[in-house]
Length: 235
Image (cartoon, rainbow, N blue to C red; front, side, top):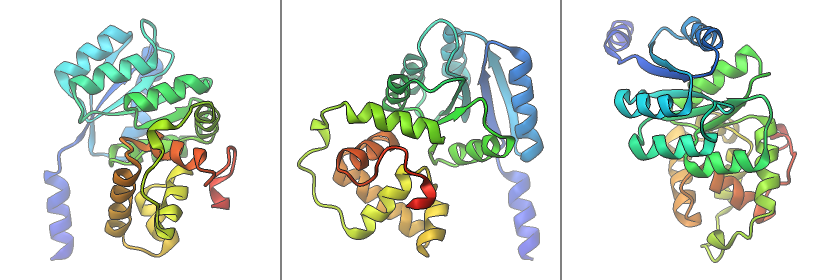
């Protein structure tokens, strides 16, 4: 009976609608093929080749996930992200790029980006990043995390001062979030329930006054909780 219920739920589940913004159609087509092979519950909402077209299609189609080439012509990735988030907050945005510019990474996450990935990443990391961002989590590749840390070190941190003190458990979870771990991964490492981790994350957001993962990471670095370049396995 349990198996029948699971199959029934799977058959009625809405597919993940994906829009891909990339100058090269062949690249966009290849990315979607990789996703389709890894998970069957998805459909292609459309392609976009320029910034204006990307914003327009996202506003009209409201896809669940946008795969955005950070080097797309027309506007900076950060500006594209901000415009899309204003039009449709529900659309999750995963950026991918050739190089990781510190200020661009920071601006993109402050604008509301949900993930950052290098084009040189492995197939497995790409699929994992898509799954994580689509599930409502955030994803930071190693280089983007380091670039973000360097950029944040140059900021004053005035927005994050004078907050309530964090508990030991909240600090543990904050460190793991800063290292790019999902709630499921954190729950496994700390032997907690996923719902418990989500509650701690919500409390963290409230205490710190953070609106997204970028500000959680900013708090961690500016308060000396984690050092730039530290590997997630060390946490």
